[in-house]
Length: 179
Image (tube, rainbow, N blue to C red; front, side, top):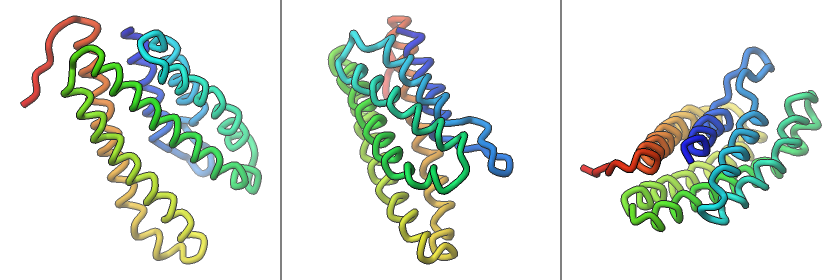
């Protein structure tokens, strides 16, 4: 179980954080999708949603590899389907973590993940519309880019903190208290 949480932790970092030097991505998404698929594989027996997240993560690897290997416009054509699949994968993954926590009578973790899910949906929808607006007025959309980036980093940090706490509690058997 601990390995599953660890793979999910690192996989989310790879897909949420885009570090680039020129056009080269240091932490490519396909590695993140592979890590999430592996983490979900280790956890699928606890809830079916981990299996769903695993399959979607595996389906996302070719999209990401193509975007990584090919220059535009090929990645632009695949950007929307990849974004939609990625959103669905994270949504299902968070749902799996909610179910996992509820079945182990840990409502605090389930509540934290519900909060994450709501913020994730809000940020994803806002980022999508911002991306669409950037096609018409890039300079105005750029003003909101910092907000989306900071909100994403805060959300990722919260999700990672909850994942770490879940891993600690569920693999060591100790109780985590909320304040």
